[in-house]
Image (cartoon, rainbow, N blue to C red):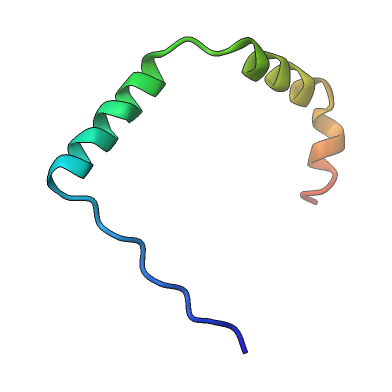
Length: 54
């Protein structure tokens, strides 16, 4: 029998502040070369990937 899924913990105080700071840093940083290559590859093969959604 499957185990029940636990609730996602709520971030509070220092944990919440650290999380927000990390997210702001990540969102404002430049896109890496690996991420750019992955994005270009996905766009190149867009129809192939979309065929799985229909």
